[in-house]
Image 1: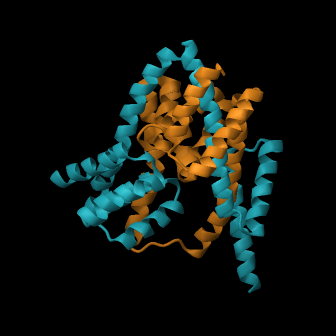
Image 2 (image 1 turned 30 degrees about the vertical axis):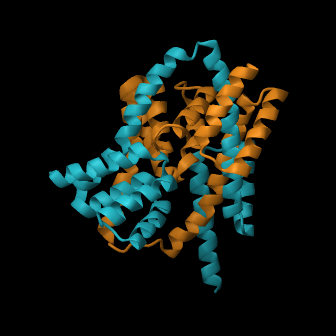
Image 3 (image 1 turned 60 degrees about the vertical axis):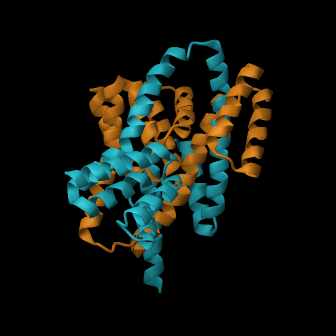
Length: 172
Length: 180
């Protein structure tokens, strides 16, 4: 039963998460409200691991979330569900026209979806902040990290490693 | 069969060596499919990215499926997609099973407390960049504010919000066209 639910939920995410990178995150936060597959804190840890391991973040997140929910097969089924809409739709697109371009209506729809997705990611960020920034020490670390990201633009892995060390040293 | 295996191998390599997916994949993809193998031209690759952006799903999967289909039809699409997904599935499954054993350790818990703060900062960083790029007109700003209100006060689901925003934008576009 969990397998079927995983397949359905991740198929839905594959169908509605338009874009790349972190767009799957808000959809996964939605899952924490409806199932006990993983907590919001576990989900936040997953984001960190997915950003610092090879492969597309969305796929990493699906495998991780599925594994946490139902073991090895859970990970495989969740990933399969996430990928399936892409495969079906892209084959249709490739078949229908060799020279497909976004038409005016598709363009219009996207002009509304993009700011909505931005709101979704911001809202997910607020949920992450609520569980991770629990005291004044964390606020200082957060501001410091964000300032470094804006100024230096390094790979996320560097900041994640740094923050792990800071967490151990400061006993967060 | 040999060509299918080559497609699988190519995208397995791309999945294994890109961190972050989507745009992070572009340089490696260009080197392999445009310059080395000449599957598609530079312009076609860029077109493919814009198609990937306006179709549902993760961009990197969309690109892999499309190139695979172009080369070897359905089985090419399956081979390419399997290739790009497999490194993630293997690595994450191994890592997740190891991580589960260590989460009780005190120092691992401290490290992850630090990492979670970093994730909050990473998301804030992405939101800032996306806002600069996407909130450049009144319509986008209005949708963004309305979406935040729906999320914070009504706890609307992500799927419903995407559907709603798409429909509102479609309707707004049609009204604009009729007026012209």
